[in-house]
Length: 290
Image 1 (cartoon, rainbow, N blue to C red):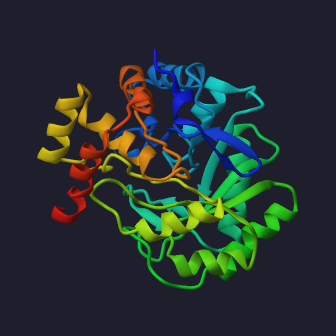
Image 2 (cartoon, one colour):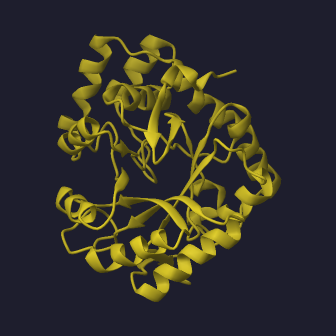
């Protein structure tokens, strides 16, 4: 079975978590909307992840909505002391499955309370403010008002630590003037490397970087280079893509998601895969040709 100890740990808030975590988004129905096709299988994936040593789970109450948090509570409560559950607020789902901003003080406050209730917690370990100026990627704009609301909820004891998602470097700096930022969650993978400089800066500062869509997201990574490297190493392309991220920087925490126990164990096994330098050189060229 996989042994994710080899991937090491990194600080997330006031706890060190193993660098290979789990993202719960895919436990919801198609399009991250509605209930899972197989609720029992979803519960099994969560339990298997924790059984294999995962102690960092990423979720949100707008997955479903209200689906993944309820599954996490059903599968894992009462939670072990070392389990860090990270959620995010700042968005909501439309009836047409769209992703919409939810940045008002009322919406943000309601979202924190919804996450608490559905997870069965008195305080949330880490809450990421998901910036929605552009749904598809970071866009400049002030985050002072919504982040101040989240910081006030933190001062009330409902949130222990604060992170940011879908943000620019300038927004991170603005965020730090309001509260400590313990993690940044942006899109990043072999083919999408706009945050290279930001990752290096955060690594120097001891701040966790959590790439979402580490395997490409709704459009999985496709590359002949990736396939060829994987074949040479006796691994799957997705395992190689995850191993590359783990070797890219020590502050990268991974949260690949799946609704399959077999796929979960395949992802976790990537933590044991050490890429030789020639493989890394080949993989580094993927972004240039993407």
